[in-house]
Image (cartoon, rainbow, N blue to C red):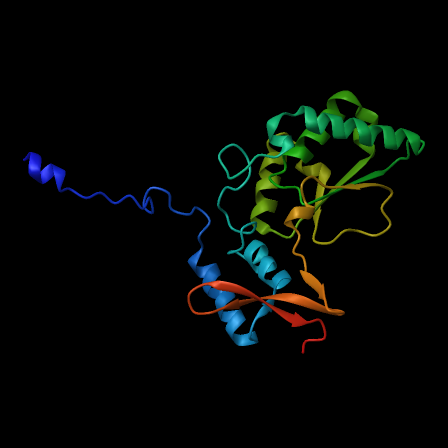
Length: 219
């Protein structure tokens, strides 16, 4: 009836309609467990677990994160022109070096492999002599991203021109580069107050995460 419709109540909280896509209960519990064992952890350790915890961290989980079906887009996903422009700059460096037989192209944090695919593909099509000289290496710590990068390069027949390493190499003769990497690196948060340096630690009060300051010497 009209009276019954007038008394109807709706849930307007939007919790069911807009659930967090990044909530990870297992990861949250792992972080809480470490905080309780160590009586708080540095913000750097908190950020490292949130992003790079094996299998649970944001960048290590299999969930789609980058690209048009993921959480965000970076320049390589917008257009292959970005990779071509970077490739052209690398070509200029190689030429300036006198066109050595080998040129190290080291990409740190290659995302889903789009930039590597576009650089190598552009070089193969446009500058075959340079393409032969390139020794492309990807610095990557996420196994799920390595698999995704491998698939992207294999689709274009470029995986054989690439190697994966867990740390930046020494003795690079070429160029080390990255796209949107620094903002994904765990950082320490410190504060200088009253002549003393303190560091931000993350705590758990039983309901939510919080922050506290501890002297840099741990006291």
